[in-house]
Length: 253
Ligand code: CDP
Image (cartoon, rainbow, N blue to C red):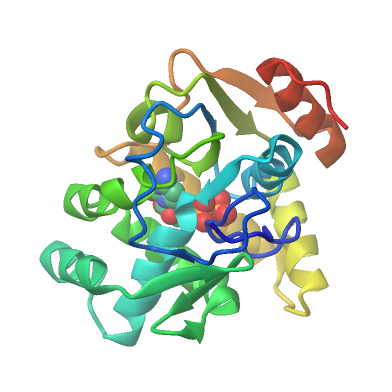
């Protein structure tokens, strides 16, 4: 597993929260070593802070870290590059099998090219949510996600970590926040990266993505029945991180 996770708010590609230094190649199957390793599943809608919180919790516990959304984004980026339409389920599934992806120091590479910044554009976000509706694409990504489960444990974030990918996770958290607050957070995040975007168009994109993610038939965005729901609208990153660690039974810092 790769050592350095992404900085909070930066592109958070799947990477280890542990101190080991080996880069994580997308095909590395660590699950054989840890099918029973503990999992903390953190799900929630776009820009709810999942990435930052999951990264912080993984670092605090020295657990591995999976940003499942980056896998959907990688397929989306490749689809855009190869002009495969978002409704071409068979074409997209073919792309998924062929992707040559690795994660180094929290940055994703596609065929050895650093694509971390390209993955976070609003255009790729929209295509990712369009391709994520296809059950065949979702199941093509399943083993890749489960392969991240390894000792001493995994923090996995996305939309269906607690419901579909890791239904036996020991702790499931579902983060929510108002759409306005989430658009503001994403706006600030993009500004720190030197990307200027109109906040109204961000809010519109977030609402559209929420609607598509929540209403699709396959693995819709929804809390697992046994998830703890945390409304983070008025909470700081430190407060949410501490709350998740407390739920897991570990005091923060
Ligand atoms: O960071 P943000 O919440 O904006 O997005 P993301 O987690 O990177 O996910 C991008 C898109 O991938 C989402 O809008 C979902 O449609 C899809 N996705 C999914 O369907 N299932 C997951 N486990 C993770 C992401």
